[in-house]
Image (cartoon, rainbow, N blue to C red; front, side, top):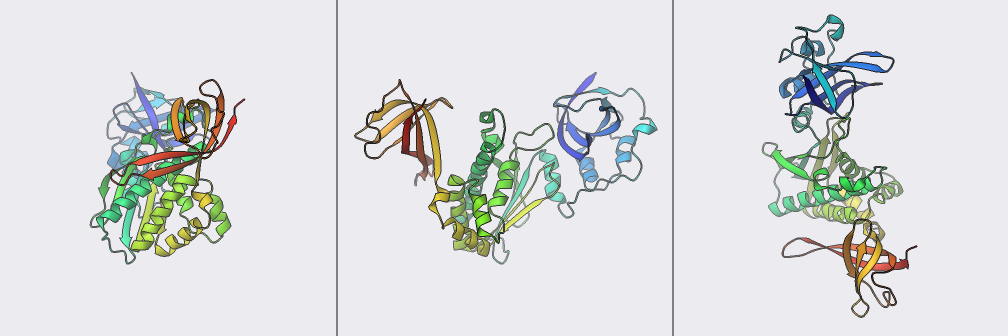
Length: 379
């Protein structure tokens, strides 16, 4: 009989994963241990482990040998290769041979003292967890409901857009499959007692080694809200996202300034070595806002289309194009005689447009508008 395992997080890695956590088809966690290597051939043993015991191990409260010597369920699995899908077989013996057991006294230590709560939540959710806290300048957790709602909404927009920007800059095949809401949306599941510290979790895709792809957006948020001394270096960081990300960041820091609000952003993912913390108070918000006001170019977003026109109205200055990249239609506006002489349906064009997102006042839904900047025939 075989059991299918999938890696959720690697705890110790050298030439091979030496200690890692995996889960089976029904969500049971297994602690897996490398027991031998021979000419690049590996052998692993694993045992089922409860969330509580796993948490105690990661928090340095349980000896590794004890987990395998006295498992919660008296059986073990073994396998030879670590790959995307691990096929593990049942160990037939009544106990493990002593040479398979780790030495006594191995206590796992991750440098996360005082962060047990977010660490345990990341284990429970098996993905990235965020704590987003808002308070006044004196750390009193009392805030206007409208401000709280606006801050959370702007934060989620920034994470979404910065994730998409970071993804576009990575050498990842078939990027389209990663532009799905599960990879950048966060869900609230709890809050800290007597405070507006929201606990949010991700359901994003994780790779073979358990890295959650939403980390691209979370790391980018930290980068564009970091403390900085050199303004030019900070502007260089801002230019890696530009556009909608920074227009939303500008609204967020303005909200913090106007209402003297402090924002605390803490996050952790299972394969991270530390809990990440960013604090934006009024002073820091003013500093970021000043840089964002230096150039409108930072908050402009450019969109390129390659395809053929489906409809053109020169007098009204409107157009609609079928974009070959994603096989969707987009419409927009043009000024002057930019559209004069274009051919509909039979000729492909490359369009460069300014992308503007407007928020409808009544429904608060967003509307995207494209303003044509340049047009040229595509070869």
